[in-house]
Length: 354
Image (cartoon, rainbow, N blue to C red; front, side):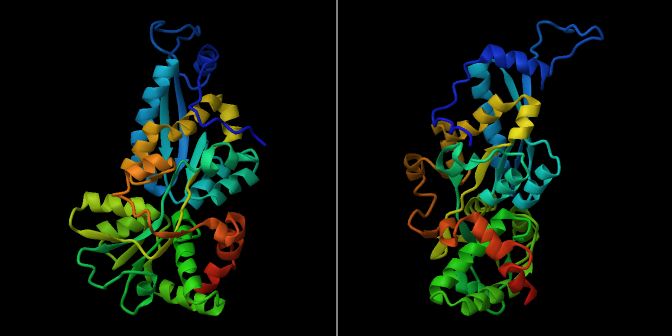
């Protein structure tokens, strides 16, 4: 099991050693045929790392990457370039397993990182390497409706009514879709006192109303917002808030009575960083997410900061009183995935019954 990295920002004190290593690996400096530097005054210390992430983090990481690069340059003198990859969280995990050269992964749920761990690419104990279960930010699941909320959608049971067209991504490829499903299931579980037959009937009615099931959360947002399909989008809270920013007056966000604490997870891809010589940069990149500066940025991009004091600063943005279940209510991600999302499990049973 790996050591847990301190919550304090990593002091990148071994700058000289780091610079030597990075000049040989990930360097941007050019050399002539004899191997000598063509311009000895030009910096040869640009390190490139790749962050394989999930759909709705695009805008946040574009801003964060610049913030981190400035910090790291000031601390070490080393320039950092971050290459981003986005898609459905499950699909992104499979891409890393199949050879995508990720130095870090920032995915929608812990199970997707566990899949990479099971292939030997990430060391055991990754979830304890950073604070808060290696989740520097959280989110929850809400509904996005068109202005005026013509269908009167207020809670999960409204999504099962005749004539309500629902947009949600596919749990087979999207981590956000798994959170969506579990939040709805928990609502039904409470409504029907744990009667599994009634819960499944409720979920079947909900998925009967799903007219488009995209592979990822951002694709689902595009279907609803840009393509104009559906009456309601089951969405990450940050996606809904960003859509309302981008299209003022056109959408409303509905927070259901019960939702789920969604914990996107981050991890260093150990086998890749050791091969690439990028471990120090990769670890610093993820640890910096916990600094006050990064936590403020997280809130500005509508994720919930893990720092409770900074989260409180955004109480006007987030409904902090909503009743949230957690993945522990489902026995943890390994159990939840086995019960609901593996081939032949409950999701397949419900969806195939549609």
